[in-house]
Image (cartoon, rainbow, N blue to C red; front, side, top):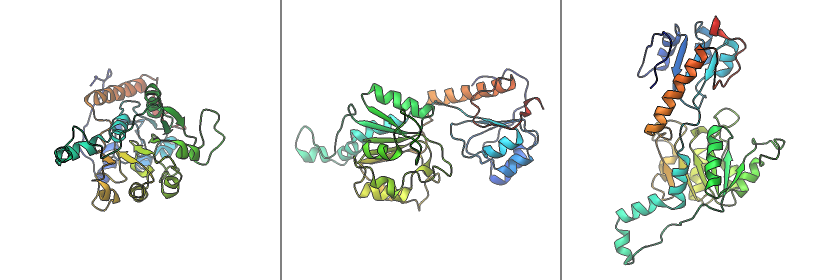
Length: 305
């Protein structure tokens, strides 16, 4: 990790409980956070706070509206990990299903040099629907095009006035062979994909979610996979993490066309280094009066206050 090129004091807390949040941000000028929730009540009382530097892309744990009112800037880290295509390749080629079958002795039982128990498909010529056009969504689209995929960028759900670069949300659901989510989680995107949306997926696509768990209704996903409405699903996120015992996704953990990874899309050694460097660059730029990667619109700027 880079050193910050200005005089500062640093306090590090390995974990922070909800009841500890205010005491830990009360006297801070800059807060670095990831999954700790910074609500409006905390923001309103943090009179010295100037910058919240999120050590991730997602910002749903920070009340950005409260930050706007308080004049606090919020920045995030962008385009530092690609996990999506690992899931796509594994599911399109049924890699985990074949690996499990070999472990179970199926190859020996077949009596042949190979066996074809699970579908195997290429990517070229298929349609990739990308929901979310930020840095990660665009990077996913670029990789998709390089692999010969036709890419559709989805318009916002319920919007048909976003121009020629966007395809109506319902049409993306209907035409895509693979649907990948890269949008933020908020009240507008909660349960973005549910029973009604799965029913429109006439191509029986793969559904990939490396964004936020709340974007997909998990009970509806279980029904869709069991009912054959989709060909498979690859998730790196769930609504509550770690996966609780009462989550319906537990019903399909053994399904050959389902992969769940434990929120590690960001966690390659290279990506973690990139994240740390970009985080330090964000803070340095702010202190030097050249803020970058700001995701909110503070009504005033506390930087010089």
